[in-house]
Image (tube, rainbow, N blue to C red):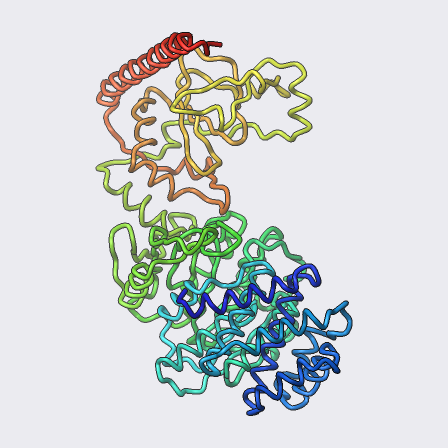
Length: 615
């Protein structure tokens, strides 16, 4: 942010502070937005600024009444704003207003020495974005818009649509991009937005920013489509819809948009994406934003399969985490293309740009400029680069059950082929997720405890810590087989931000594992448990496991995925020899750690005694 932007931000914050306590934050932003726009339109009418100021600040007039009149007058003079101002601020008179406060606010606004009309427009845009941030903070980050504008070749695009358009920030940047490029080609823009306030602000901004040929509709994108003649088709679609939104599945019945399948109630992601595909013409492209869950959830595999088999996905790009102001989830960009070039048919380009992140502020990150350039270059030129980008054919995607997670193909698949021979983990070990208990079941089973209940916190530094406060008995006899630990089991966290492991000691306590953990029970005739333990914790193993993780805010590793996890296949004799040495090495290390801890405790106690601070 440059010095001038900082100055304008300070003025806006000062005006906001004057109004805080009198009005809700959302209403404050609307009022400021409307008033600044009033002065902008007055400037366009070549009114004398001093004359306007004197009229506004006159002691003999009610400022609220004057503002109401100005709003009505401007909507009459500028038909394109009809219903916008009165919709955003129905009436200034309905509030317990203070003429003194209003005078101060207006005086600060009219005393801003704007460089030109363009700077006033940018100030209005900034106010609108501030309002949007106050109203949820999930507007598309500028860094993602910049990336999309680089990825898509707009030279042959004549029509654009934005579903879940918010305040149309994408359209504003798109048409600014056209002006910078010197393009005078007429491009039509269509937007749909459910939120009434965002819809009105969108109309205001599109007019103020001189976006031509636009039409915005205040409607829910997921409202049922009944008749085929209603269909609008365009060259390019942008859609940044709410992530993982619960929706009414019944609305999808007999809706022509969902030809590839109706998404589950728990997430409308693929409903939004199919809406985009439905509205593309035969040579159209679409860019949509999703999460990792979008790419891997089993509940939507039938939809991913149908769309993949029709060869409609051109690229999937993993972006850095925390790009959105109020959510830390990682994001994925999916590019659909109904007219792939001949060289890309039957292929999907996977890109992992997650490491190209930089801190924007305390609450948000952005994509590094280097990352944006690299993504655009790889996509446009079809570049493959180790650990960054790779074309994958449909046969490979079928093999991976239509997972669209770039990490599976860039890390997991590539790394497993670096071994001479591999074997699936499920072929040498039994894998089982721990017992899932409700709070009520936990309380009931705690009354007569027979076993420890292990959780994520009990796995640390490769060892198990048994918590006396976490003990239960079993509900069914088969728990002793399914969920109880045995010596030489590998315990692995199946949920959480970091994957942790422990080997169950020969002398272990009786314990069950919770649903946050998984038991890997190795067949010792086929594989050595210590070799497996070390491989899982190695850099290669962890990178491969990372490729299998699902979930957005909480990382998950499903046992069914683990069964297909490929590990190096070595001779059992070699593994047993090396495994015995690894076991002895681990034992010595743990003994030394234990001795060091005991020595530290004794010496610390003795030293504290010298100064009278012993316990």
